[in-house]
Image (cartoon, rainbow, N blue to C red; front, side, top):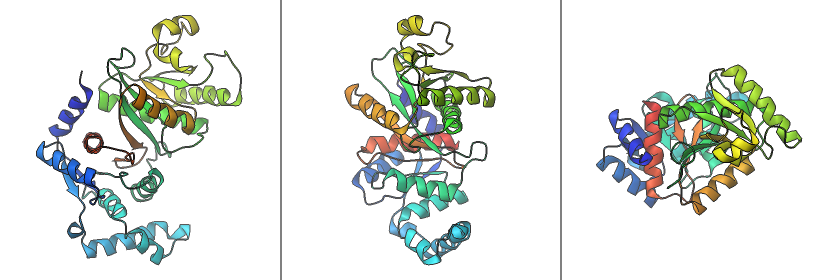
Amino acid sequence: MDLIKEIRKKAKLKLRTIVLPECNDARVKEASQILEQEGIVKPLLLTRDKIDPKEKERYIYEFFQMRKEKGISLDAVAKLFEDPLYYAAMMTREGKADGFVAGADHTTSDVARAAIHCLGVDERFSVACSCFIMVVPDCAYGAEGAFIYADCGLIPDPNPRQLACVSIESAELASKLLDISPKVALLSYSTKGSARGKSIDKVTEALALVREMAPDLIVDGELQSDSAIVPEVAEIKCPASPVGGKANVLIFPNLDAGNITYKITQRLANARAIGPLILGLKKPCSDLSRGCSAEDVVDCAAVTAIRAQ
């Protein structure tokens, strides 16, 4: 299965408008052309002429009304909206676009802040997080080499409830995008009590919460990464686990572990890393690594479009 082709094909089935606010970035310009030429999404490259001054003023006032209780001034909001990122986010909020993709020229914190403040957090979880779709070539593990890694971009040290929400949100994404039955592993340096520590306690508490919140989800923890994805290791370390050796959604105990692992996988295994995709919001959007290629922008736009379908 060529997952990248399947994602692009799925995006074409029901075209969605995706805003690209970083119009001066050469990679984003190239991606916009590819998206339009191949009919993957309806890209809206947010050049200066696409920004309506009256709409911008309205968005500034609306954003101020949403955030004034946090102590922000109207002048401070106007300064924020000098960046087209916020205009794109408000377009998405209002339904004039189905999602937005940014991050080629912004930090993750910049993109996440605009997304969370403009789009709002899904009340089901009240937790925004991020994940990557990892596609590892010539790999027998996961879903034919495909995995969801989370959280790799937003929550530095999730508490048990946050970790549980990350697990459920990531599983939902895996089911929608990859057409697989998600098998979720909460990762640790311990497998089923082989070690002790506060971070292990956090993972086991998160597991109990996941099972309470999503009783039909196939999930287990705490598992070491080899126990989670390698059947032969799972037979030795956790033979009774419903996930051991079969995991395709890997949940990391903190941001250090997630971010380091996705980058190592990407570089050493020559894997494709699509994301970070921001989860847990009322409308879909995607961040980008500032080291992204034009193809990465295309794939993030395609994924964002599918999520909006």
